[in-house]
Length: 227
Image (cartoon, rainbow, N blue to C red; front, side, top):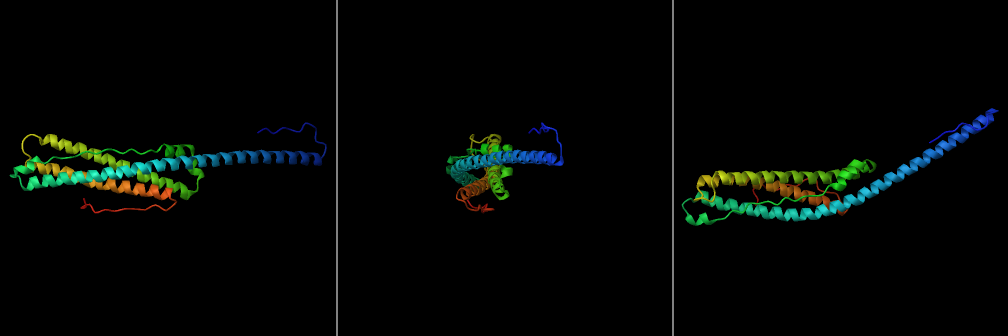
């Protein structure tokens, strides 16, 4: 923005105030135009952020539905493993129980957050109403909790296979000591699966509520003894 001195000499107060008025109007127009341009940029930034965030949330909602099914299957597998090992621990002389097989695995579910990170970096969230910005924050915090709980499952898986190696599972009969050691690790695994299941459900409910224009849930609970 450039401000130029008058091209002609000022001969009176009238000329002075005329030039002052001209400069003031010019400055106000320039500031107004600059403000309109900035406002348009902010509106465009927010509009684009809303569209990409909604698309990403829709994608993650679909992924979380699949994750919930996978976690439910894993909980059933772990429960069956624990039942088999408990029977061996309680009836070590029953040779028929030695034929039981264990199924222990977990498939990690990834979620997208590129739109969320972009909205943070570009400052789009700062231009949104506080309630709307907080809603997005709640959605992605639930998502991060779900991803963090999945890491615990991977640690449980590693610890469980460590027990199998240490106790030499697969060579000879499963003794009560072997069964007890494996049961302890599976119990921790099962508890963490409950947490993963809850976070998957909570995150999915938040996503679905947002997409339907409704308020999301604040918490969920589940009986740790349930299988």
